[in-house]
Image (cartoon, rainbow, N blue to C red):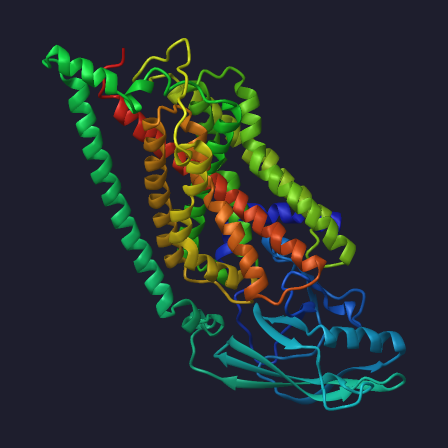
Length: 587
């Protein structure tokens, strides 16, 4: 748990978030023989990325109690990082052939800890000048007998490339494996070699980017395929709907028909025109609908803003920079959720706007908090670094209470006064019209479930790259691709929801508001189903801890995605419905 002073210092770091995201704490410049700190971070099973522990939870060389800790900000703590000074002596441009770190006396408990770690393929992470180094604790030798098949790497070879007075690249290799035997002592050693390079400082992170994976031909093909889907879908929607509506307008606008034709049209008249007196009737549970639509509008703007900042600022470079930026941008965009909610709730005739505002400000954060609380309890039970310290929770709560909540309140007030006046094209009738029975595929539940298929198809391939990046140690950096896919998702969602809404209205069902929201939100259901497939087929994760974190984080992501897509679908359908009823004669 973080000390109180450090906890509140994170709050100060929040106000300096721009410098956190786009700059570092130092200038990364060294003079010959200047000390260079090697920070140890975490250790854990390689196949379980979130199951990480303090490096010294294994009986490596113990450090002094006053060893320096490095806290890189809110996002780094939430990301499960805890950097501790290894106290290994390294100086800039000074080679070390071989030096001792410490000597470990192996007893039964230490041998058991190391053997368990080796059997579970434990890896560790170091940092030097904000550059990561990775290695495995040891390995198994299957050709040896059961007692001596576990070997521990005792020699760490660090190769550092530098350009002038700046460190460009670091690499770690290990050798001199020693068997683990009770009563024996192991001398842990290290070496450091400095090599000059011509690579410039701005390009030093390129080595961590997997260009062949992310820029594979299939990635480009998926973008092109999704783009063609957008063109086809928007063209199809425009052609079918505009042509159909034009015919409907012409039929309903005829005034010079003879009596027989008019009577025939009236007897055959059906479709969206008949529900003009109910289509703008306030939906059921308008408080909740207003809250989720407002929250979804905020999330859509948040995602767009974070992607743009990532493209401009290369946020993948800094530890936890994406998380920090996401939290700050969420707080600052809370005005949007309040504005959309306030306007929608007021136009629907709602009177309890304070309840609507509180629900909007707390809906998504408290859902995430509920899931996070369960995961945090599991992490604390396991003693993992994934456990969020209490002080960090306080900081996040302060950000929500003093920035996000007031902005949501302000947005609600502005939305009620600026866009809250009812201006429906058609008057709502006093008695609701009965909804006739229709075929099974025109039921709201079926329309809602089928509505997410095409939007999911447009982001299917990108989901694979995002999941692989998050769960398989790859640095995601192709935010230009993500921006295109996000825009494609928005367009496809709007088009599909409009089609579903039109079919529903043609079936004389005027409960289109929740159907349009759920139709678009069902995209998240298919993403979650895909995540189940990905877990069992594409990963080697195991254990209750990692399984809980995988499905918990995925549920949190899908809830946000569902609310985002649902809001986009609802807002698109609202514009469509208002547009088609604006040009008819409402009795």
